[in-house]
Structure formats: C-alpha cells, structure tokens
Image 1 (cartoon, rainbow, N blue to C red):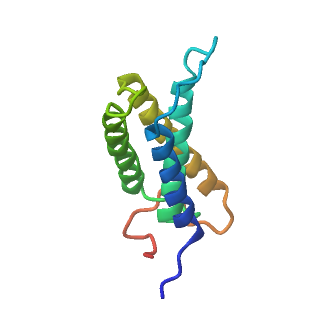
Image 2: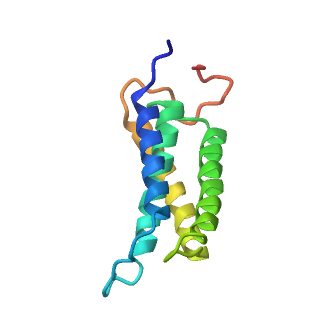
Length: 136
C-alpha cells in the first residue's frame, strides 16, 4: 500500500475547508468598518493553498519555475470555478475583485514557498532546471 504524505492530507483538508467555507449557506456576518476583510480572506486562503500545493508537489526543495507556474495556474482555475459556483449559493455572489485577490494570494503563496525553500537546510539549488531536479 502506498504511503500517504502528510502534506497531501493537509492540502486535501485545506482545499476542502476553503470549498466549504465559500459554499455553505450561512448568514453573512457584518464586517463593520473593515471594508475589504473578505478580500483579505481570499488573499490568505489562496496564499495558503499554493504554499501547500508547492510543498506537496516539491517538498522542501525549490521547484522549477515551470512548476510554480503550474501551481499558480491550478489555483487560478480553481478561483474561477470557486467564484462561478458561489453564484449559485444563497447570500453569495461571484466577484471579480475576489478573484483578483485569489490570484494575488496564489502568487504570494509561491513567494512564501520559494523563500522557505531557499532557507531550508539540505535543499536542492534554487531554481534548478527540470532536467537537473530529482524525480519523485
């Protein structure tokens, strides 16, 4: 039986939590004077998502630039689906500014992973080519 990596379980649980948080019908809380709190939530959620994606797919080593683009593209596609499906949930709506916060958060998550990879001991050299990187 194949061993399941902790990062894979965390990624699946986190992704499910994001989906449920945006698709479960609930009364919308009053945000008071904090006008853009939902945008911050989108940014943070997608930063966490891409950080976990990169960690799951590449561990502590720095992924090639192409892999970072793939992580970002997966998050971008999920952001489109997420915003579209929210339009079918009562008290929710699709919002282009939410999607832009998703994209920015996804990019920031990759910056977090790249920085963490650069500081991690025993890592492969940063931004190595795919031909030089070990396969899993």
